[in-house]
Image (tube, rainbow, N blue to C red; front, side, top):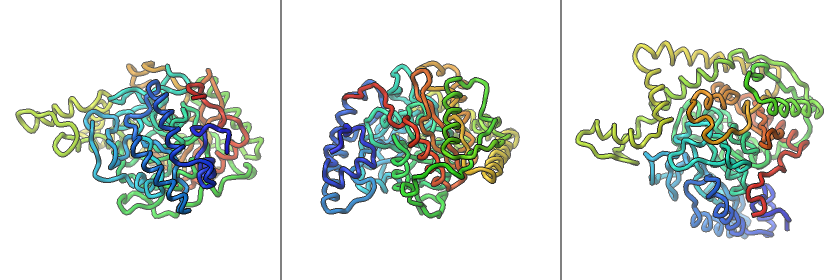
Length: 490
């Protein structure tokens, strides 16, 4: 029996113990539910805890294990970002406009995990409709960073990230539209994966920006992230944007050093305003990769400087269209009024928060007559240039390494009054979404007592190389074993 507390076991460790019958899925679920009960009042990672569902799923997982009907995620405790619809728990997208909404169907990733016998601990907190970089835009409560409760966990997937970082979930699923998995992973000192556009089905993901959104895993190790991605990836007939590309055994491909791997360093990721502690940690990580045998190659991504501005035209434009469906007629909040138009206005006025309203207005303006060509069409052209930059860079290198964020996690309320400064938190993550490539954030050091994230980007559908490089670096360092002090002995 492992001496590691049940709530700090990795998914891979849990799998071995479960299969050897040294621990039961019910024991694992109970330990995590107890930790949620003890810690989440301070952290705020969950919007809905699915205790009864989790215990029933865990009991079923134990029966499957006894019958040797086992899949990688059987019995593994998982948190789900509250933008993934579930039949047995509310899905609110962190918004009052969907308060109490229950979906008649599961998201594809939820269904695949359910079929494997995973244990759903609950729906994790999120910035409203995944719009935010700090998880302070949730309509219900902010999320606090487990490393320092006075700081943000990052966003929009702050709840799923904090739940894993604090030992309240073994792994979790989030969504990444402009960095919403990688940035909170960096801020919380864990692993977070933005998958290639088309690698994971978005069926049942409440849409923010449909050409940018992707679902991906959070974990405390690269191996766990690889296992979870393998469990949910693959073509889905319900989502025409998924690619009919075979899903490799990501976990089996891990191992080895970095000899022969070409690691690209783009000078465009060295920006004004980067904290010295972040720059030092990332520089040390690059030196470590060189020591492990990697060839360090300078590359250029000249249109990176336009990515942030381009994103904040395209993403709000798509959000404006996607969120038009929330009108109070078929589901969610409905504020009655004398006329249908007033019903729409009052429902949306009371149901949407300030950041969502801001982005709807930005997007509607960009799509309006007289401005569509000047803003939206031009932004799409720049997006093509950004993608071409990556295509050319990947002809020279296998991966590109960069900071995940220019700073460590900032204080709660530090940027809420300055949207531009808030948006800058995603300046290093947005280009990957614009280009549709894959990327992972892994811990690479500490600054100001807070984790620093290292971003590893790879060409489309080359998550295998991305994971292999991340794993080689992770195994050579101790950062995967560092944990926040909050409730560490609980």
